[in-house]
Each structure stands twice: as C-alpha cells, then as structure tokens.
Length: 149
Image (cartoon, rainbow, N blue to C red; front, side, top):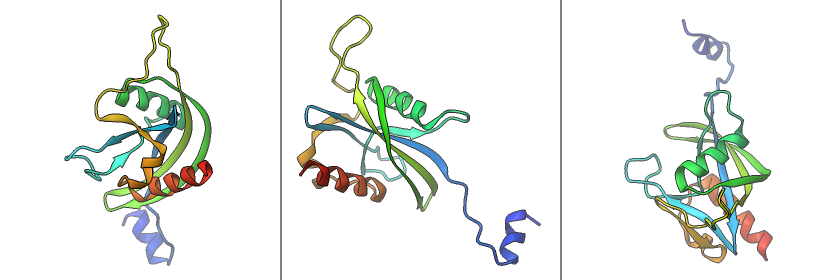
C-alpha cells in the first residue's frame, strides 16, 4: 500500500507536492515585461510574466534570473521577494515565488539591451488590467495597479 493512501485511510489530508516556480516582475519605464503562453503549453493563450520551474538545488532567486534570460534574452537582478503563493491547477500544484526585479540595461560591452526576444514585450502598467493572466498572476497585477495609484 502506498504511504499516501494509508495516511488518507487514517483521515489525514495528503497534499500534492508543489513544483517550485519563480516569476519575474520586471518594471522598466512604466512598463512590465509580459509574454503569451504558446498553444501547446499549459494555460495556453494566457499572458504571463517571465519565469519557470526551479532546477533541483537551485534557489528561487537564481531560477528567476536564469529563466528571464532564457525566455527573453534580458538580464535582470532581483530586488526582493514580493510574495509566495501556493496554487493548484488541473495539471498540478505549484509554489510560486514572485520577485520584483530590475532590468540590467547594459551588457558586458556597454551596449543598451532592453528589447526582449521571443514572445515577450513591454506592456504599459495601465494596460495590465486588460490582459488575461492566470489567477495567481491576476492577484499580483491588482496589487501592482493599486500601488501605482
């Protein structure tokens, strides 16, 4: 008998293991870095901030820096951990780490580097309310907009 089933038999609630995910809230010139999930991805068509799953042994802060660079081509630095959220989707549970981040606009040779690649772009903060985000991201958007007023 599996351990989880035995605990349930005894009346305990067994929660699924949550996958650690880091998300970058990157503000620059009144805009936030936002992308759209592809048609084959979970939550296809929703908009998202850059981020992704943490590798084994990787800290959430290191993960968000790596994921942002991989997804957008832009280097960032973490300012602070804004919030942690546990959320369960139909495909599994996640432990979301939302980080306020700063764009590093100069590369190693001193050239400006602010234009993301792939499916990300700079969206004015005032337009964030009009974009279709997954629920945990939506809560953060509401918080960002409230802070701006």
